[in-house]
Length: 260
Length: 267
Image 1 (cartoon, rainbow over the protein chains, first blue to last red):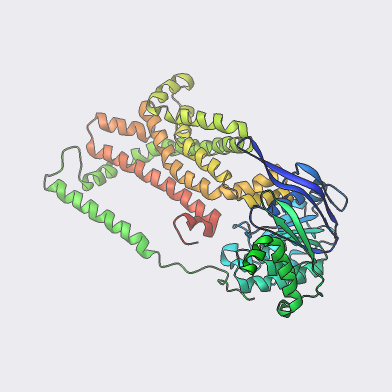
Image 2 (image 1 turned 135 degrees about the vertical axis):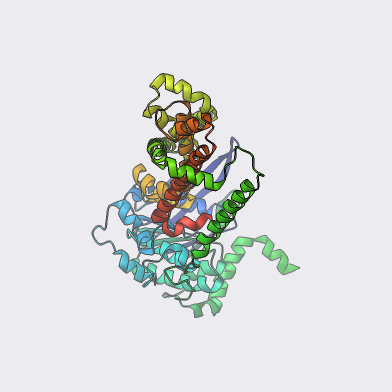
């Protein structure tokens, strides 16, 4: 439930002694409680942007604030939840122990934080509390990692292609569940994806990035009603928004093929 | 629940009886073959028949166990000491970047010193008592332990490492909840290599100088041309080293559970 402001942020990496820009002059505003998607080709810096927000990386230029504070402060106050492309669970811990990890590190359940048992229920894994990650399917592992990210009731939930490794059918179901969970928790969500339909289906606004150097090229507001249902994907309105994202991603390339 | 999942609890194991009987049968066949060859006069005088070794055990088992105790003691002490030193050095090498190269270089240098030459020098410094034997046992086991632990501590998944950063985990939490559990399978692999090595290290130290121990018993037997007794001591060392390995493997099973077999295959 924190607003994220990204103000003229740039990030350059040192590669072989040369400075290579990964992100140039990105300005964005994610409103508190909203759901946002970042989409772009590989190398556009969308994962880098997510890691800048999470204070895993520091920007070379510009300023990022979460709820008016620097990301480092938000991080140390445990206001950031992060879901990686791989579930990245600790294989020696059971489902419930993996979900409890953030509570252990932050020093036990505090105040109104959800109990791990209720998180297990929230992500639909009741009955699997004591299973080890290796016994779960990829989709179930990713549910555990979402529950883990929510364990400290973060104000910001950052998702780095969380369902990229899953099959289409599982991904659709996980997206619906993610929307339900997001609405129940009221957190500000930022989803990095490379699937146009997923971006439009999930987000209030889709930010399109381009590569070399990574930069923001367009923002498509998605004014579709919530709660979102699968049938929505078959509507002309949904297709129109998808096409706008596609146009922003491919630009002139798309026009050329249409002419020929 | 849309996705399929294996039921919690894992799959059943095949019966283990065959796994014990097969090596026993091979061993029995080899013993019988050796006995037959010796009786046929094919084997040289330096190789006794298994029955002669058994007879040696019959007359000298009191001596054998008398000499086995200090060997086991110095090997065990050296093994434990090597583990502690390796853990400390590995934590230093991984936790503080500039330390890694010097630590590893020093370890390689120490490991490449011939122990057979180092042992007498060491005995001049610290005397020929238990401390010298423990130190040799330690040095013999240290290198694989250090390499294994360093590799294990560095095997932390990058994303999980980022997660611990996001959670603002302390260095201690990171070591205890992430790096150490990650390193455990590597550590046990190294412990299994190191356990027999510290037995051999202790034996070597006893060879050079000791009043008691399997090493000195072996030397006495050699110099008195008691071939069966020599072989009995060799066999005893094999048994001690194999038991040391077995104990570590058992500990691994207890500590790691299902993760223990992951190197061999399956889960």
